[in-house]
Image 1: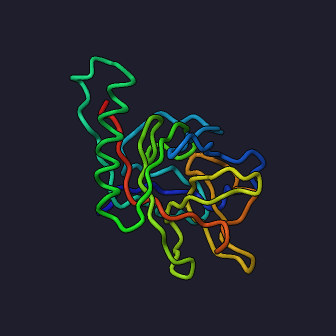
Image 2: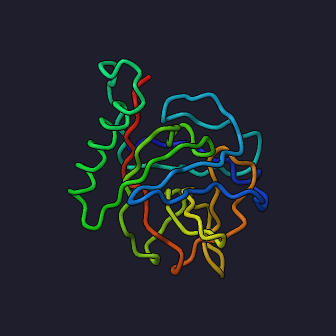
Image 3: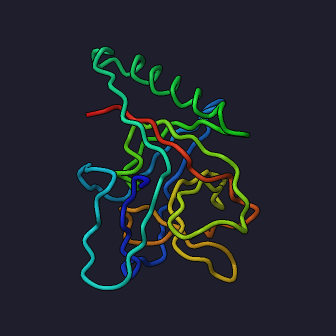
Length: 184
C-alpha cells in the first residue's frame, strides 16, 4: 500500500494563507507552512472526532540514508536531488521540485525532493497530492479534497482550512508521484 495520511474533511474551511512554491531556476522552493505537527510515519492517521476522513497518498516515498554526508546540507541535497532526478527521468515529462514546509507532513517533510508528472484533469481523484498554480502565480502542493462545479478543493494535510484557490484544468501542473527525503 502507498504511504498515506488521513485528512479530516469536516474541519476544513476556506484557507486564507496559501502554501506556496517559488521557482528557483529549474527547481522550486516549497515554503509557507501553516501548522506544526511532529513528524510521524507516512502511514499515520489524523485523529477525527467526527465527520468523514480522506485517505491522502503519495505513490512512492524513499527515506535515504545520508549519514555519510556528515550533516552537510549541500551534500544531503546533492544525494536527494540526484535520486529524484534519476526517478524523474523514468517518467514521461517528470519534473523535480525541492520542498520545505510543514502543511503536508508527514508525507512531504521539509527538505524533501519531489517528483511530479502530468495527469489528465478528468482523471483526478480525492486524496491525490497535486501541484497547481495559485492565483498569486505561485505553485502550490496540496491534497485534493473534492470536486466542485468550478474545480477541485485542495488543502494541506495539516491545515484546518481548504485552499482559497481551486485546482482547475488550467492551473493543474501535475500530480506528485514520488518524494525523496533524508532518513531521520
